[in-house]
Length: 109
Length: 114
Image (cartoon, rainbow over the protein chains, first blue to last red):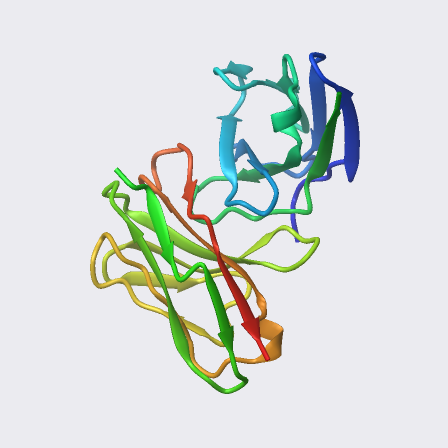
């Protein structure tokens, strides 16, 4: 079973920030938090990952709580093309990703 | 640099037939993995490899075989296809077990077993 809990679906207005939460209360000290997304049954696409510190790249920001039991993925200015299923995954190795059912983010015009 | 290439994109098999799903990557990645995705669900890990000659089972390995004779290729073999194996199959590769970087996924093979 997946070790993370995410809402099934969320809506966001185009141009606004999308904040996607993830609970991972059983994460161990050496496990990373990874975020991937899947657009319309294409192959999953990497977004960002982190261990303890907050991270930012050209796609998104990742905020990890101090106790590491939860995190939030932030898409700063959502567009219609960001409509996808977003997966929060915890683990230590990128070749054994355990996917849950993710959050379907629907960006509304 | 083509990334991860999967062939075929679509396949229909009859129950009991065998076939091989091909996966190739040109990024010199050590890690390669196979996943299946059933409707409305996340991906589930079938088999993975940490380098040429080394493979291991994932969450749902039954009915599938893999081998890794080269760094570039990681074929997935269905020994005797069953309707329960109707799914979308994704191959992924990443740099190494000690490098927490992104995994690259192929575009998938959509398999129907009738």
